[in-house]
Length: 524
Ligand SMILES: C=CC1=C(C)c2cc3[nH]c(cc4nc(cc5[nH]c(cc1n2)c(C)c5CCC(=O)O)C(CCC(=O)O)=C4C)c(C)c3C=C
Ligand SMILES: [Fe+2]
Image (cartoon, rainbow, N blue to C red; front, side, top):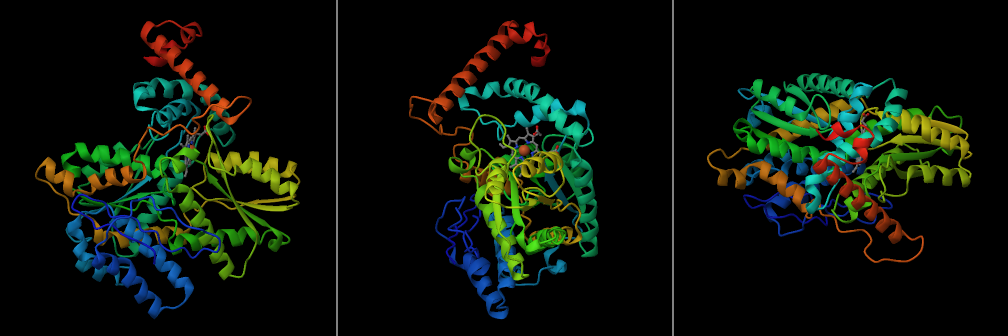
């Protein structure tokens, strides 16, 4: 084990250890949290000791990977806990997957709730522009330098109006709206049933970041229902500042303001891509689609993940890329264990705006694969567990067309997990495993709240990988003459500044180009 763990102080986070990867080609996983001194007892119980116990009693590699998943997910739910809950760790961690609820008091007098966090999507074409406004108004999506924070909303209005026609076209082509709400509601329903079947009755809520039902609405319902223990489960397998991070940031600000919520015990499972059940469910779906090809062994498995701007990973420390790569490795290892050893590629799709995003890009990669003579391609959407515009339109229509044009003859696509029973059952297990670690909260005064509640820990979690928050250092600082990357960047910045100046003039004087075009009410 190369993991090092912080000694948690009453106000510090439990870190996420870098588990030694079982990957064939992974060099190393970047640790998104600072490596500091560790409470040896805690580390031993939670990781070192536990891993040994499992390895001794169950030498199969399969199981070890599974325990990695368990260790990681439990660790992830733990690192948001206050120090006083960790005296319960060792015993519980060494028990079976389903803890004895009579000792964890997860039910009984307690009312357990699960809050599923998701992105949300426009339900009609009229919703598209306001949905895009909400998305671009999120400082975790458009990250402005501190000096320009006051422009976040006007800029969001501007960008959302500019993008709306293109987005509307996409949503129109998939039936006039996003299926996300319907699918997430169905997942919530199935999760509730799965929890009940595992003897953990719980209410399951859906809180969307950018459209209905908004996270705020879900929280109101949670309060009305008198939930006393809450498990927060973002529906993104891998963590990104722009997705789970943004939702947690919002949740933290809601919790901070609310007396009821400050008193409610909760825990967070920030990412869960390593879970055995999730990996197996993905592999089941891949195998099924592979077998539809005439020659399954010749098919290139093409993982396509939603991209993020490169600076999120390189400057802000977003663990997204590392988690994505590890997730793909785990899936390929499980496939190999089952006797499938196809070639595979990971690429990133859906970039927006002028900055550089994670590479390789999906479109470029498809063209290259065609040039290399690949004839059969199976696309696997990997960053999201529901069908949505980027699977139904971008992959199924745009990338398929590009692939066929590029010389690929046989095309297939793995469906999103949706309500796959193995997947839902694994989510239920993740919730149950996290219950014993739902934190006790401080109630009395602000100081106590700041030092003991997990909320403060969310803040620290966010700060550890995202220390500069919105102030990302410029990706290119030195000017180079010619049609160079730096020239492009500086031109882009100059244009951006000009737009900002025009917007400010528009807002302050009520005159300008938007007025002339008759769209000035945008800023009201
Ligand atoms: C893991 C998943 C996602 C990441 C990471 C992510 C980052 C990210 N997205 C945008 C901009 C847009 N995203 C849009 C839609 C959208 N994004 C995700 C997931 C991730 N986004 C989903 C599931 C959806 C679709 C929801 C649906 O309605 O079906 C859109 C709107 C659609 C469009 O116009 O293309 C935008 C815009 C950025 C800028 C970003 C990282 C900074
Ligand atoms: Fe997105």
